[in-house]
Image (tube, rainbow, N blue to C red; front, side, top):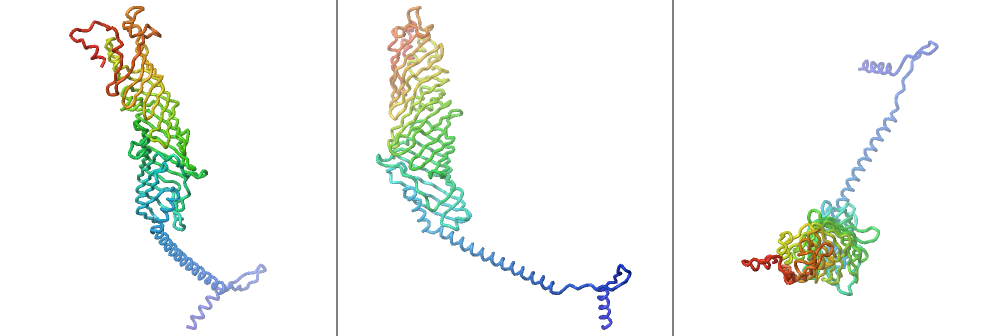
Length: 477
């Protein structure tokens, strides 16, 4: 053992010493320096301290997670409590001046839901009720650290807003700030809107549209954006909504634009000229492009008699929000490819001229001024023309399905003159502007139009067939 120890020492001493030759040729033994144990102990203590810090950080992180989890559970429990739901209902009611009822509110970090929200107003102002169903959203994490529900958007599956004429002395009130909600937008996928007196056909009806509501940053109001759906004004046919934009600010609603379509090419654009406010009549500008004339006149009204496409660059639609029956439309239009049918005098004209194309003129141009209100539909300053075929000027009106008006009918002189100076019928004038003219008074109903054309005829174009003395009468019906 001693020899082994001595051998190890010698070996270690040989490793620790080294023979070195100096520049002058002398040789010496150089001893290697050992590292101090103090350095190794310092390194070990550093490792121990770093391990302790890591352990402390891990413990702290776990503690923070536990605290955050407990806080989240407490926040979720508070948001789902009856007290919070009642406070939210009160805050929404104060902001909208309505009675609010919320059903089945469920809030969690992943998705928050509300089965329904109902708003009801006293009936003195324009708003009557608002019902929203199947609302949902995803809340920001900051919501659970405060008393406000924050997020990007609240979505509702369906909703309906009912409006009606306000009382004379009622004023539209501005919206107040809401205390518990803070979202960038509110969206309803299937939204309906009705305006009209209770129990009557709505004067304005919007259905199946998607509406997005955003807050106006500078003005403190809200903005409405419509996409899709259908809209109906009074007795008009439904129009397909392309896009709409409106604003509510300081108790005043302003329709910026409403773009609609009908058929494949018909376009109608509405813009607000006057806002909806207390004591003011609403005034909208109306522009039409390739719009079906029968849709404009109403397929159950004058649209039975006139068909084609019209353009209108200038027109107005006005109504008083306090009166259900105050709507008035006024526009100047020009039409093309217009067909006329159903008038009794057309059959009589085709019979005396023995030309069937006069029974239903097609492909003519038309211009005039259209006026509509709850009592009457009227086209005045009318001019319908198929060159070298027929000209009609005058006025056509419909009230309570009853037809009235006065027309001036022009027929080419080549078909009407008996001689160079005498018309075939005394009820027609001598030629003027290439046509012979006669006056027609309209009457009857839309179902059975009538006129005085046959009574004004004082002669027949040919001798009647004795076998059928009523030929002229039958063909004119």
